[in-house]
Image (cartoon, rainbow, N blue to C red; front, side, top):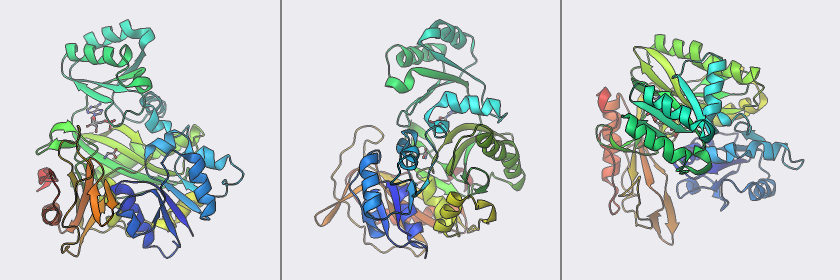
Length: 426
Ligand code: AMP
Ligand code: GLY
């Protein structure tokens, strides 16, 4: 079959690499893709939310299946767009409907979903400008820290952890009165702060049944030892040593199954990945957030560990036959380390030449491209997160050392990466 992947990050390079291994994949296209995805298929220069042109390209290239990588097209309704169009409705599309994608697109929607389906999550209240005074009173009486969340998508910046009431009042006003996050912040979720260890689980569902993919832990902070500003993710590990069989069963019983059953009860049309961000405290899991897609850089450690044929899984998702699929996992550890442009997550330069990409690579290491661009004979930087080195090892320490070694071969001006990914497990 002919397959189209939508997106252009390390996640999409990892998907392209994995999908191209399947004997079921004939031609592979990626829109818009990056230098890495071009090694496995044809990049199409179409923006991720340009539905009209994506549909035209899908028809022209006789696409049978579309995998949507990032959240933006899903939250904007790409699945409904294809399904509601006579010419494109035959195309299998992996990604939830617009209404179901609200699990990521609206924090208030997700909190309401979890409350109604009795899925453990932090206590919360939502406010708009109309109940501003009630919100201030709520903040005044709250225990600190407290977490303020812009309801809508805010490019990963909409969550603010406030340590004092002064800070919380200021942020609350910035969001509701001064439109700090535009439309996304017109509603604010105020949530209890959860302590513990974060863990991400990944579920692939056909709307009725599901399979659990390998879990991962993401390292969001820019600095060593989890310090400094939040980023899209500076690295990831899989498996995560805190996930015992007992905890896994609890997560399945208390969170995964109620989530899938909840989708059905609410008649939410969902064929795709559910990324569940958890906080584990004293062996008790609580949901921090849902995402309606795979994580980045989590995908880059999850897919190498997944032994199944990816296309077979995606087709089973589309055909509602996931029940018959059994997930097989590589027992080794995988560690991803992200090389970023100097200045990220703030301002950074682009178009910087990357050297060393053809250096000797270890046999169980991969280099996924995130923000890269082919310019004549050079590959240059084209984003904050530039490259993702992923390696297998007998344990996290060994895998991390191999990924670090891989990045030591690569150079670009002001390149930066964390050499302590997985530090708490070594
Ligand atoms: P999100 O944008 O929902 O992924 O949140 C970003 C990050 O904020 C999460 O990965 C957590 O590290 C942190 N966070 C969000 N909600 C809470 C919470 N209730 N308690 C503690 N940390 C949180
Ligand atoms: N790495 C976090 C995310 O993909 O949302």
